[in-house]
Length: 612
Ligand code: G6P
Image (cartoon, rainbow, N blue to C red; front, top):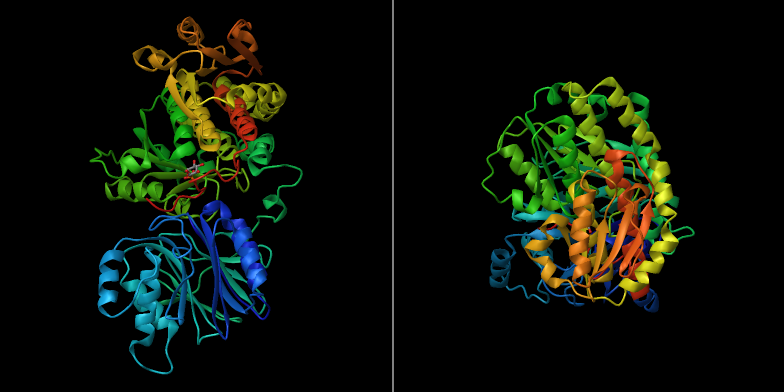
């Protein structure tokens, strides 16, 4: 949700800022802009993609040794150039901002009374003027930008990561964070700042993650950080293990396609630690054995695709580990009068580790006394794992396509590992069953590869989907959340209205929608509910609905008029939802290709949602 980047160097920073913004574009792509210091603050902003802004910057030959940049996902104010960042106050202060300032109305009124004029509807312009106000207030020629930023952020309520430059401070870049991610890239005679590491990797792999409430002052040769209490502090420097190559498309046309095909590897990498150590609590952290031995239930909290991973896990946890398990969307949980049980393990699931609703829901759970917390996350050092007692990192690698794919299936591996670990600790399963589960994990990447081989058949189906306006997805039991995930994938990247139903619920309403124009996708592997699903399919066929069935070899389906069948690989039991995720991902991807939509950057969405 908005990406920010900044650089202070002895070389022209514009190419670095543009490259950084391109890598951050997954965070928002409504508009882009940069401001550099070239005697005065020079700014270029454009509605649309970074590439358009880049062309505009080239046209005026924009250069500078100090600059900031932004890629926006609109929250306050429409998608217009005046609302694009950076925001500049009186030609003196330029600011880029990720997050939301909650008291912006009140601050805007105060600033208007002081004579400030607003040219945008954004909350960010408030920050620019506020910094300007503090910067110029003393009428002291030796104005202090750092002090001004520190004073300004004290007045802000809400979430922010900001980078600030001043027209008369060519050797200074000031940044601050509260509730939104921000890191410093440490270079030789140059320093950088960015929302995530991908934006600085072409210049440095040395990074410092700022903590909540930190303010930092960057020059070309120095980095000074103050914590939320204003105390000067040293933060640990890390060497990022993210490679630039992993952020490139390679032979693929889209990141989503690349990430779908990377799943056998992502799963193997995530499973590796389990195969080495077995289902042991230490996989989740040093205190896991103690924490797990004293829980009475599980509360899973997540958003989007991560929520659907949690929804699969509920079936596993209750049936295999015998623990009551609730799954809730973070934005609902955080505003409900929750009857929390401090003996429940709170599991937050997030690819990015920075989704604001999930973060806030975790804070809320902790405020209710739930301190047994585990985060399942794909991004190291992100906010969620740092706020949790335990962590399991999925090893999916960087996921750039807005529609999550490999993060989802690796989250399922993490949740399955959690389930079996708990079941083992609680004496719910025999050694033989543990060995079978380990074996199932070992064979999973191979089964997923077989599912990927179905791509040509699925591509043919997707041509039938492309002209449709609606689609239904049906599943039961473990595969109901996969139907939900399939519908989400289809709607987010093709804009076809897709809904998922537990197949047994069809007759209670959605059957009214079914006619010849309604394609109905059914996830129907051979499990205990197969016969029930078959009856539900008859209900659809009887109303003229066209069925597209993913069934494994044992399901004994045959093609007939209006019934299309793709045979998925046979996969031992409970991991079947992971294997069945692949065809629904491929279906959405190919339908999007057929419709010509922007697969990696669907309209109105962003990968990382750091606003409410
Ligand atoms: C956004 C993304 C989804 C993702 C969701 C939760 O909506 O577009 O792909 O599932 O956020 O993100 P998280 O990083 O918390 O898993």
